Image (cartoon, rainbow, N blue to C red; front, side, top):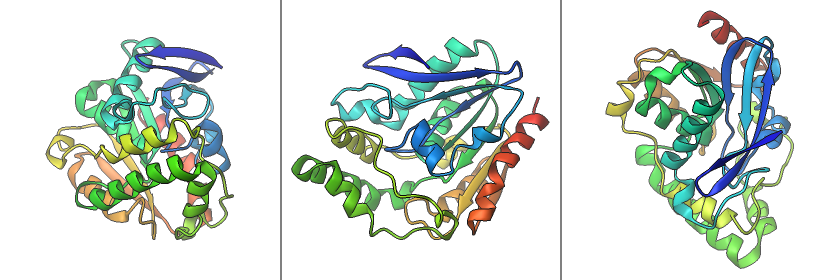
Length: 259
């Protein structure tokens, strides 16, 4: 593992070089490379013969960060991603994959520099647009709870949330963000939304959208809207844990097809 400096943070980076297609893998809000692996969302485990860059977003996992909510806005996370691509894959087109906040980061980077991407795998797109308002309120309330009662209370409050059928086998895990930074991370997410559909309509990058059912934090409606507005998108919907187990092979197939 190595470290990469970006404004206001030092990112923990892991690079596996098997002399193949360049791939960058992101993770979701309050997660990390390690936590996504536990949750079964590490699609890179099914890859071989690639140059795979994994990293923890600022404030998450082994990366550092500041107590500054705007640092964690999705637009700023896209800045970090593009700096990483300039360092590890200069002048190359890269396949990007990531869930939820990772999907948002990839979309902002692709809106700015679509030619940097050979393909996208967008997993579990988060609440967006009309559905984002209530979620933002939830994040702000979560930040207040962490400041009052700590990370454990925040995690306990989340245990009552509905579990999507496709994630029924996932273990219980703690947020991969410290109590010092978690309020800022949550408030940054509350200040974020996906790019407008009109902006996304200009992202002519081959895209696979991987969604699942019955998850208010990652509603199927967002995935369906992305499928409608992105010019070269296909949508796969998981209903069981077995369906999710097919996702690494779907990613590997897409990368092989776009080389």
